[in-house]
Image 1 (cartoon, helix red, strand yellow):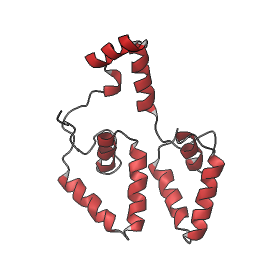
Image 2: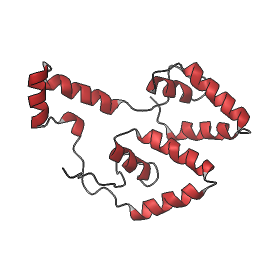
Image 3: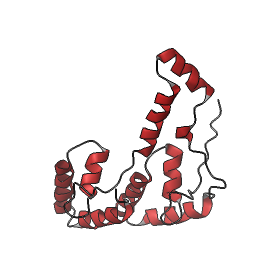
Image 4: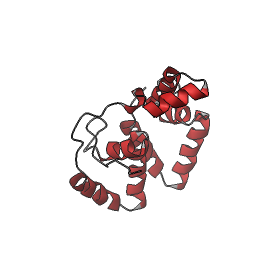
Length: 160
């Protein structure tokens, strides 16, 4: 069976050129996670990732048409599987929508500064205190670079 997925720059999930949003759509993950990986890669590659991002913005084509939200559609195979599994097609559809809506966002409720750690904790279903400890320890070992990363994450990750 051929894979019909194509890597494109996203029109809906873009902050600069849609590269991170397009990669996230291709892999079926949250665009904020891809953006965080890009930011960390910029530091790890001493800025070389900026050149890679620019090249991708020039090479990867922009999305041409509106994409239909696949989470809301049930294929015939899903309907057949739903009949045999005891779950209705509606229940499977609701489960897909819930998975599609799981997005990394800054927390309004569990925040100390910008809500980044609270949002990460909620996304990964872990205690935000643990995430905050990681930020503090990493900040000590990276001579404060992690503080800059935290601020970038506050800008990149949308608020809940």
